[in-house]
Length: 166
Image (cartoon, rainbow, N blue to C red; front, side, top):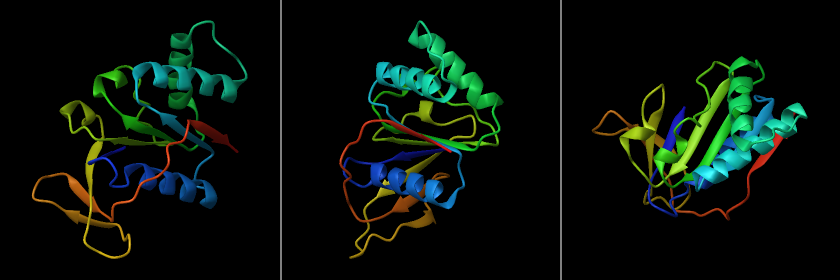
C-alpha cells in the first residue's frame, strides 16, 4: 500500500494512471478501481457505485454499500488495486481504507504528508521533480525512512472515477 505525496503538478496522478494502465494491460489484476477522492462524500459515493457494479446489487444507503464493498474486497480472491486520487483530507479516509489483503493493492495520491496517511502497511513515497530532460522515474533512499520518487513535472487531466473488471 503506497501513498504518493508531493506538490501539485509533479505527476502523482500520472504515475497512478500509468500504474493502473500497466497492471491492467499485463493481466496482473482482475478488478481496477480509481476513485476521485477529493472528499469523504465522493469516496463513499464511488464505493457504493462500485459495489453495485461489481455485485449487481444496490444498497438503500451509500454507507451500507461502503461496508459491503470493504467486506467484499477483504473476502474476495480477485486481484485488485484501488487508486484513491487527490485525497484532500486524510480524515476523509477514516473507515474507508481498503483492507490490507494479499489480493489487494492500494495507491493514494495527495499533497498532504499527515501521519494519518501512514500505518497498517502503508508507505509514504514523496514524488518530486528531477532536472532530467526525460521523465525517468527513479527510486532512491532519502535521508528519512520513506522512499522518494523523482520525475519531471507533468500533469494529467483530471478524470472521474472508473472501474474495470475482467
